[in-house]
Amino acid sequence: MADTKVYRASTFAPVNIAVIKYWGKRDAKLNLPTNSSLSVTLSQDDLRTHTTASCSPAYQSDSLLLNGASQDISGARTQACLRELRSLRKTLEDSDSSLSPLSTYPLEIVSQNNFPTAAGLASSAAGFAALVRAIANLYQLKSTPTELSRIARQGSGSACRSLFGGYVAWEMGKEEDGSDSVAYEVAPASHWPEMRAIILVASAEKKDVSSTSGMQATVKTSTLFNERITNTVPKRMEEMKKAIAERDFASFAALTTKDSNSFHATCLDTDPPIFYMNDTSRAAIAMVEAINANAGKTIAAYTFDAGPNAVVYYLAEHETSVLAPFKAILQAKDGWEGARGQSVTSSPL
Ligand code: 2P0
Image (cartoon, rainbow, N blue to C red; front, side, top):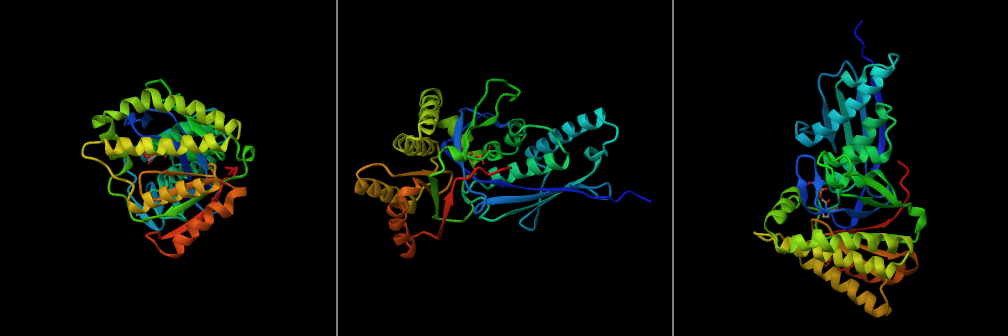
């Protein structure tokens, strides 16, 4: 009788929000960035991708279902992840003849996000991190999260940072083959457990300019961009690591807001210009400025990804001062579609 056994493994992967932004590729095929970046992983309780990977000799071909809809997996990025994971499994099988030949079986991947896909909420990051982790679990690979980050990066750059909880750096690396372009944990969430983030959803619609095409246009046409990657970001990476090590919120906040504005400035400096922020985003910036002025010190920091949604970082002790003004505008439905309170967690993947 034909073998119809199904092998299965499931995992969750969290969303991460960069405080030093990745924007620009030096190699689009391998997803190698023009600068290092640093992010904070958000709680899996609220925003996450759940993925089940299974394989069986009875399956017809590889397949991927996202939020119930069948996805095209013929793209180079998904194929690169599948190829690398199968190759690691094959190495295990070659060294241990008792292992079943899972690397030769078709894969079925079923993913579910609990947040809007492609709305500037880093869905590709959690998505590819969960895909890589689920298949690595299915294949019982011994790889470390940093080794898996090299694979997830090829699916989507920011995905390499979602393999860790807490505070995570993606070092751009120097090698042409991308072997040293990997992520690692700068500090666990427990190092600074008071950190909180609120995400303000200005629009849950799909963005006009994808990150991939946007960053390639910036690399080609922005004159501000070169200053950003050669001087601004390398210096900020070190300053941000120090701010996190010292739990210095004022420095963390200043670097976070400046880097968000620097990234959006290079978008505006792109030809044709890219506008990810809108009037609602700018109202959030004004609100954070007012909250800090009112407190007489920096207690809130905003950052925006490739979309209009605001992420505001603050410490638990200032929850009321930071959230009350935002709750007021959310209730007034001033362009905001909803908010989600988030806290940083160690995300045990
Ligand atoms: C980041 N973003 O560091 C930056 C900030 C958006 C703005 O990483 O082409 O979806 O798949 O490597 O990872 C979004 O870019 O791009 C992103 P690809 P990705 O989080």
